[in-house]
Length: 210
Length: 229
Image 1 (spheres, one colour):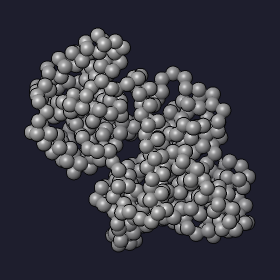
Image 2: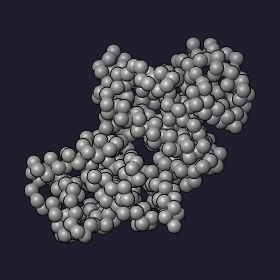
Image 3: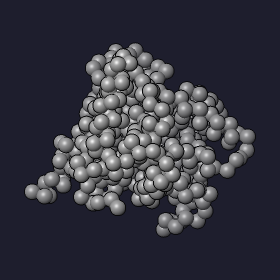
Image 4: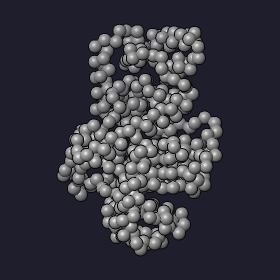
């Protein structure tokens, strides 16, 4: 299903991390002229500790402390990500709107949307300061999505949910563990932090094509 | 500028700490921020289960779930990409090690090393030998021999491990967990916690006074361990 001559960015647009990846990987794909497809990958956050059988009291105490430490650091990272995005909030869209956004990415019309354009439209919804600005930004986002994604605006029903689940399962079987991830030349990279490595690989690819 | 000293938590048995180690040292050697190294001895079994392999690589015992195996395999595959680029060899360990003696050796060496260069040499050699399966992290005598080879006093280390060192180590684990340290490498500046080597640019940015936009996360991709902000 994944084509070897393309790069795929797998996102859950509800997260700040995915929004950052949309921008940085989008810019990277333009810089290196790598065709990029954005797809949804919707799975619960990885939590391998839950698979560890219940043990002695000291092990359970350690697991609880570690879990709390993880929660605290994730919160700090989210705050830093919001600063990187120059946003105070990503609130304002309800669960069904987020579902519609993610599932819209399942199919694109003949004219695929550049990731940077999607980023700017989404970012505009959260950066807007007044209600009028927010309404206007959401209207613009809606128009844009309707023009590019046939599923956008459709009722989020069992068929779409099943397709979303099926795609995420398929990607998981390809080695994707979390959002955002990048699939490039048959390998999975977790997170946009891999871009320096990917830049080196894209440069090498360009040289070999010359 | 931040007045607080940079603290960096590592565990010698972590592949991510291994591939980050030289880049982290460059924060001190190239940018001048002295690092207080703190060992965090990970209890791998508590979040990734345990497994033992034979020398040929076949798994002889394991209580890992499929997802835990996926995460472990992905972690080694990923760390190996970066290790190879640095010219390092990273062989997956054949068991889940108890690295607490190596952690105590870090506490000890940091106070006994004649210079920071000696400490760096000790840490680098330990990491490199462990990851080619040429070092037993649980062998106190091997740790002493490595200290001696790095010109670090080792007399008394044996007793340190049984008494004061163990107490310091165990207390530190509780303190770090309470502070929010759950993996390595982790960077601490005052109360702020930065997890992962992808944070090195952000840590430097913070140390340098948080001027300009906050850098994006990125895994360092140099060929000689330079943080290159």
